[in-house]
Structures are given as C-alpha cells and as structure tokens.
Length: 594
Image (cartoon, rainbow, N blue to C red; front, side, top):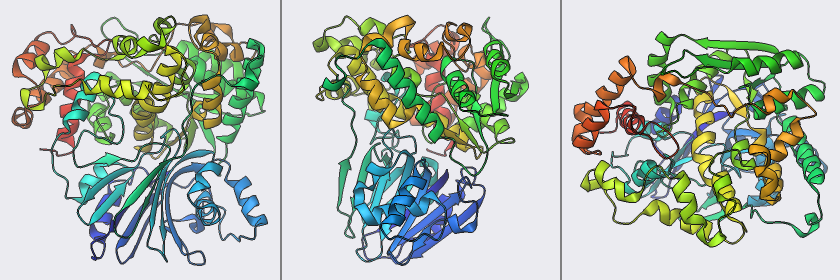
C-alpha cells in the first residue's frame, strides 16, 4: 500500500522532475516508510512506500527491471503473488526480491496487459516499457486503489490522490458542472472518469490504459460482472448458495492475511466485520487485534456500538481496543479528515474512519474491514422496494429511493451559472441500467452499486482515511470472485431475513445471533448529523467565506434558509443537506481551489 505519481511527456520535452517531487511529497502519510524517484527523458516516476510485503530495500519503488526493460510503480497488494511468482519461476523467470511489485512487472512481461486477469488483489500501477516508450496504467476490478489523471497538451500526469496532482501545478479551479450535478443528486458520488474539478479525471475501475509515446491511448475494460443467473447453478438450493458463498468468503479472508507484518480487523460490531473475525478464528487465528470507535452522543443519538463489538471480542477472545473519541477532539479532526480526502465525500463515516485509523496505526499496519457487504449482498434499505418493480421501470424506481433530490429542485439550490438543463445523473443511471445483464430491478441496482456507487463512496472513503494514517485496509467482501458469485445469486436469497439473508445464514453457525439480528448499524458521528454549536459554526464559516461567495456555487437565499434551520433538511437517504453543501466548500477551500 503506497502512493505513486508520474509525468509522461509526448511533446519532445524532458519530464518535470520537480513537479513529480512535489506530487510525491504530498503522499508521505500513504507511504511513510520510503521515498523513491526515477526519471529518464520524457518520463518521471515517484513513489512513497508503506512496507507490508518484502520489508527489505529490494522491494523499493520505482522498481527497475533492467533485464526486462520495465519500470514499475504500484499501489496496493496482489494477494496471490506467491502463486504467480511460482508459476513464473517455472517459466524461467528469476526474481531479485520477494515483493508483489516485481511479480507485476514479470507478469506483464509474460502476459502483457492480460496480466491483470491473473491478479487477485487491489492495485493501481504504472509500467513503462523502456524500448517502446509505451506507458501502461491499470486499476483493479472494484476500484479499491485510486488513480487520478491530468492531461494537458503534450503531457500526462498521474497520482494516487487528486491533491497530489494539484501540488504538481497546472490545474485550474474550474468546477465540472456535470460532476457537481452528480454530487448534489447521486448521493454525493461522482462516477469516473469525472471529478469535481474539470482538469482532473480518474481512471475507471477494471480498466487498462495503454499510452503511446505520442500521447495516443486506448482503454480496455477487462472485467464486468453481469449479475445474471448461470445455467450450471440453476438447480442450486438455498443451502448450496450458502455453502458456496461461505467458501468464497473464507478464501477472500484468508487471502487478505498475506503480509510480512501483523493484520488486524476493524470491528464495528456489525455482521460484516464480525464474520471476518469469526472466519479468522475458525482458521485458528489467535491474538487477533480488533478495533472499534465511539463518539459522544448528540441530538439524542448514540455515538457508539461498543455493546455489539464487545460481544464479538469476548466470544472470539480477540485483543480488543475500544477507541473513545472525546468531543473536544472531533472538530479539529473534521478539518484533518477533509484534508485527507482526494475528493469531497459527504459521509460522516469519513471522520470516524480517520480518527479510528490514526489510533489503529499505532498498533498495526494492516487491517481487514467489512466494507462492501451491503452493496454486494443487498443490505441497504433501498433494495427491498425494488423487488417487485418491473425491469423496465427500474431506473425511475431506483432514482426515487436513492437520488438525494429531484432534478427540478436543483434550480432552487445551485446558482444559474452551474445549472444544467438535462438531468445528467438520471441519464447516467439509465445508460448503466441499459447495459445487458442484470435481469431484475434488484440485480440492476446491485450491479450499479457494486461497480459504481461503491467505488466512489465507501471504498474511496476507506482508502483515503486509512492511508492518511499509513494504514492498509483490505476488504474481503470485494474479492472479485466473491462479487461474481454474489451477483449470480438469486436476489430473493440476498433480500431475505431483512437483507443480506444469505450472509446471515453463513454467520449463524459461526457467531452469536444477537449480533446477526441486531438493527443495522454504521460508524455514527452524531455531531455532524445534528449540527449545532462549533460544528454549525464551522459550516457557517465555510459557506459564508469570501471565497465561497466569489465561487457562487449555491444560491444565497438557499444557504441562508439552511443555516437558519440546519437540521431540518435531509436528503432522500437522510443525510444532512446543509453538511453536503458545506463539505464541498470546505474541501475546495482546504485544497486551495479558488
């Protein structure tokens, strides 16, 4: 787990090494264990390293393989790297390290861009071919590892974070109007390739981009689950599905224990993280470090779920850590969490993950986390209403239950300069739902949420907040083989038992039912959900700052009305609408965007 950056020029000029140094310097928290810079003519690469696999300097990056004529920078982890290395050794390759980075380079030499088909893991990487001058960029199937791009005439820059690209220079502060519409409509999600800034894009998940020396490029999408029933599984019973999913999950959890350092678990006390602990205990893991976070109550809402995490910790005898966040540390942490965001992310979970990660990183460098289970196994409240909706009506039904607000309301919120005539967010969902496959409305929603919403909300949130502490988070519910199997699973089995039915069936023989049957939880931060006092003051400061007024994203009358009644306006899914607007302005101001 690391941070990478680079510049690739196709105008005959040498790469700007100083810009790559500046980009790399912003990512020290992602990789506190080492710095690497490499340049040759039109290309410069930078890397910050977090030592997880091959702790020696032989695993340092950028990694130059002179024999193969390849230079690699990589962020992530290839969980099956040892098996691939053994296969490549049998094919005559010789290794100078025990790192997964070297495996990527040699796998590319052997299989070309199709090397990604061999990888089980999370990754974003760049490979430069010395002899051809070609650059290859790739991102993992579920987009767990980020890769941001900035293209200008004659130059391509790339980095693991958007702020790194800003540090490199040459990016203006123009807001992407379509991205703004998505942010305010699509639950604050801005799908690739857009970002909130017009000068920055992100490589879509499951995509390989091959860039030629003249700057021309071709993208290939190498993985796309279809969420349809498979003929060979037509006669499977509920018991068969439970057993198959349990086995895939067991493999996914085991894969994510691969490391040369200890691996802990973020234990929220919910079904998903508890299942990870249960499966590790079943596999004989002892002395497992687990971590939970809690906040002070506000607005009549509890700020912790220690009751449930304690049950699991006691049941499996983990080395459990309760992290209690005092109220006076929360406000400064909000600004720190916003500074760690590659893009504006409205979920108050960001602050919880940020504070949790800062503490967890004092104990371990790697954790497993339960993110993704709700999107993959239908755990959210908007899935059951879609069960009886005809497939032809899926787009309208999904928009009603998921979109933050109707398109018609935008004109009351956003200044006319930033308004769009068309409902681009609905158009996006219509195009995504029209892709062949996903036979039912629930299938269509799950496919969309697993491959689009998940990538640019929960997954990005976990990556940004954990890496801000130099902590690697691994998500077994996003193992691509498990996602493929879950996509083929009949929706009724996932919707059963109040949601995630098949997953609850996996858990019942393994852990206490009171955790399985508990009300759905999350990382609660009540002080953000119920804005008052200094938290409301911070929001007011951001939205009334001269920079915000000059930018003019939001109508002043709307802002005034929201500030007068800060907790009365909620989005469709219950988020604080004032916080959504303020978070965007706070992020832009923190990143120095004018």
